[in-house]
Length: 260
Image 1 (cartoon, rainbow, N blue to C red):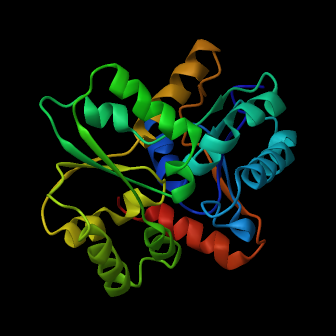
Image 2 (cartoon, rainbow, N blue to C red):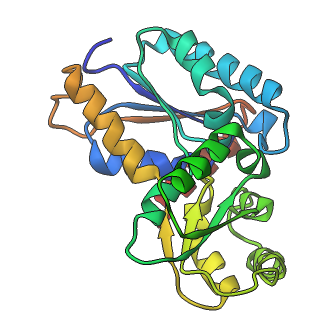
């Protein structure tokens, strides 16, 4: 590992680009290698064992690039495979992501919090442990987990089907028995769909996503290891995709340029 070594950012598809944007905003001088496993997406409907197998295989295939850190920019893959990836990467630090329910719950007062994620994340032991820890601390907020696979399809479809995604979300949100105060974006695709979520709810909410926290954690680890890039110029971003389709790469750049 050297200061010029890349930071690997991995996701099952394109959602992790929202985390990549946070990383680049915070550390623009670094070199990034983004890998999306679109050939096997979506991960949210797969078994835990299959997610572990796919995640470990994809990330270990990138280790010859001599990364100085690996970011699993996928809540589903983190929940299923973080320990296995850490073991496979040896001395290379691995940073995962999880729904930011803790920060949402820390807001003053009692709130209704909608935790949107893939069903696999919602069903994971990791998410259950988060909720249990909050309850043991005496947290009185109401946390409502909800799967929203239509958002993944919307984002990966270049955000073209506004009518379709808002209709499906409105139907899902109609099951809420009262308005919510906060929305936890528990999938890295979801920050690209905040306007669709807000429009479908019909009122304003506070959004929480963990991308900024992941970027800060990554920076702190690299600083502790004296591995932060010291070249004052802007670093590079390389997009790779398991579909090996030029259109996938073009779309990666398009999504990276979009506002969140």
